[in-house]
Image 1 (cartoon, rainbow, N blue to C red):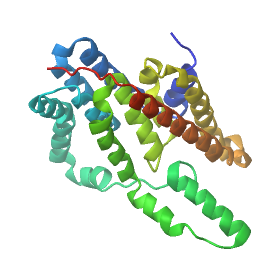
Image 2 (image 1 turned 120 degrees about the horizontal axis):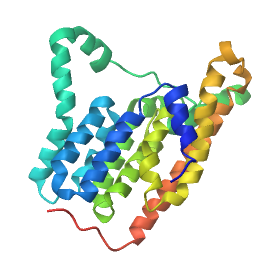
Image 3 (image 1 turned 90 degrees about the vertical axis):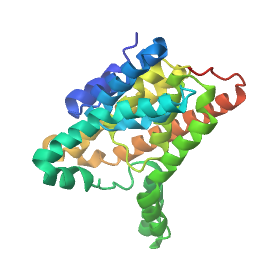
Image 4 (image 1 turned 45 degrees about the vertical axis):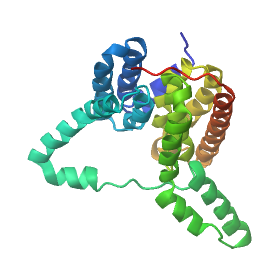
Length: 275
């Protein structure tokens, strides 16, 4: 129904060569099954598990799915079914390549890229300005704190949303809040992460915010490769645009999250839960 999201999807798949649309597909399929056919919740859990198996980020959506059930035993069973494909794959790999599993998966730690995203990025920019213009550094410890522990704010936000907001809204809107919370509080967000929210945002009650999100996300993703592949495109002088556009997207996401939470708080009627 909309074509404005196509450039971002194409850039993610063909230019960045990322597979994020595969787990997005499974996540959306799982949402569709549970939303339209609640009695097939086990199938929904298995489909979501395929998304988690393809790439781990759909596990963030588990709280949004689990709150759909009144009974705790159904929540537990749904979660177990959803993580089963990944557990089986890990068990299988550990038999034949346990050393590579430990080194490349369990012990792997991403390298933080200060100045490009989120709260630590904002702190990095402020500290860099102070160093270059005033020869002082005031926020290095604060930056290190958010690099080490900043992600816990994201987990805390999802947990709080589970108990405060999720029971008042639809599954699709719960997924929207989960992803917006991740984008807001995560230390590292890469351009390919922006496609996670697309199908849910376009079908949500807050679809009017989709054009702004797609605009900033498409530009941010579009300049990533030509700016950083300087040996091919020789556009290294435009590297400053990447964190600037990323910052614009981040502030827009914060704005959307605040407005959405405000609207939820003002809405008194709550969604009935599944048996």
